[in-house]
Image 1 (cartoon, helix red, strand yellow):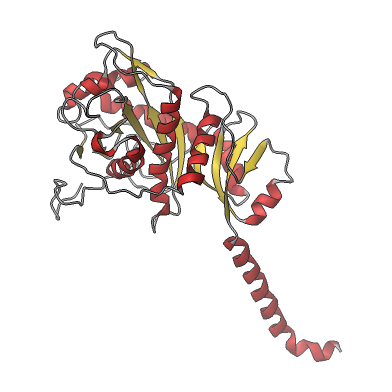
Image 2: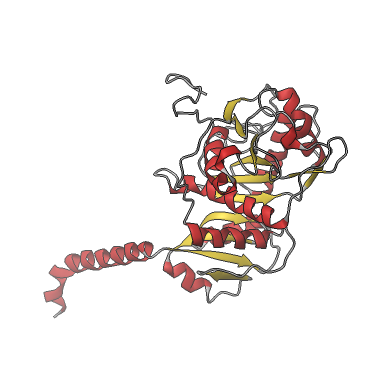
Length: 351
């Protein structure tokens, strides 16, 4: 009997190997996206490595709160048997009454928006008459760090790998300008979710599969100015009148706003072990007549960072269109030029 089977052994091995490969492919095809909530404040890097080593892919991380994870069916089956201080959800999750800036609340809010509106879908044509991009004023280059071959000031060179998105929300305190805007908890939740949706749009593009984002939201940052009533972009010296204080308050005062921003981002990407980092500054404009700065613009970014700026209304786009503006401005932070008619960049121009 054994002698009769020996000639067929190579064929049988090939058959079984093909069956195994087919099973693996089928397993990969049964991928599912879920929200994973953390029960403790374990170090983010430790959490992320555990998820990825088990076969999961982090689409959006909220350190200290949770993550939106894409993984094959086997990952979720195994995770249900592990006692690792996490809980996964495939459906909508009720928002608990937690602190406005609680990372778990932001993870839940972003997940529920993901279920309701789709994964990073940007489904509107936006009027970009108040959008700008340009080179950052010179900031001293220094030190060296991650990723390999980059400088510590190279905080957003290539949109690939992992990216920390730092959300900064200035809150006017009436120190110099009359305070006309105040952030409400529901507005903060909305901004976090829209920013996450805008960034995630890039993950759904043909070459975006390797992108992952970590979202870090700072507590409201007090400022004596009311940013929406001030200038932006057209004059860096006038713009930094109010942006410089944000980084100063966070402990980064180099005398150069853009260098302070890069130092802040470099530390943040080290903390979360990501390749890159971009700051997103959103000026409250809910009570403003047109949702634009005094210089008539509402969204802009600097080529290669360190930050991009939007308003709550984004001019004619409206609050719900923030995800589209975020996706657009984030590309500028990674040196992309405007390619629409009237965008201001020639066909041969390079960033």
